[in-house]
Length: 250
Image 1 (cartoon, helix red, strand yellow):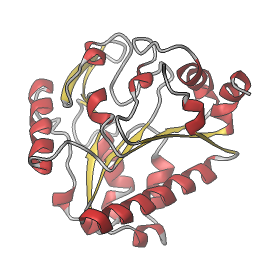
Image 2 (tube, one colour):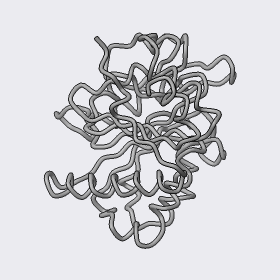
Image 3 (cartoon, rainbow, N blue to C red):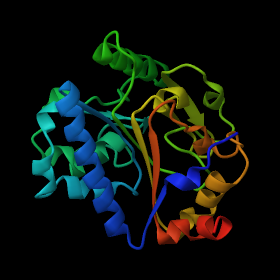
């Protein structure tokens, strides 16, 4: 039986309140991880949804609350476009957040899109394994978004990567975009200690309701694949995105 994800849904009247809550949670989890084991690992998401969150983390006083020298940045997926392309997730995060805080460049692990999709996936997986050494590939924090078609990271409906059982990095071709992407597999994402979905806007209300409330159909709604093995899953949504889910599950 699938656990009821509605129990993990946090709803905010306005987007600003949502982003502040997520920022506060990241800082709390980061500082606890650093106290417990000396470092904090986070995988960022792309798209427009986290832009305001990144802006908050880059400004006073939030940037002072983070121990950036002990924070290590990764990405859950990437479009195979040049690093200076505005569609590149790393480019976005660097310009909004990482270029404005005191984080060592060696702490930023970018998916190498200068390589072919196959080689980029292999190289990034090796980078992860080298970073975690002989320990599990387990992030402290995983930030995810939700597409209108139910995708998250680059786990798109109808793609072969949805059936991947290994914890790793894979290439995926998205027909609608006529573009290759590189993505973490669902089993790798599910290893994280904390997984936060951030969903905002009326245009996401229908798919959020479907993902949270319908029967398990990961081929149709890939975000349903995200079920942490031991960690915490939390959905952060504004009222515009959540209202249909609420009506379906009063």
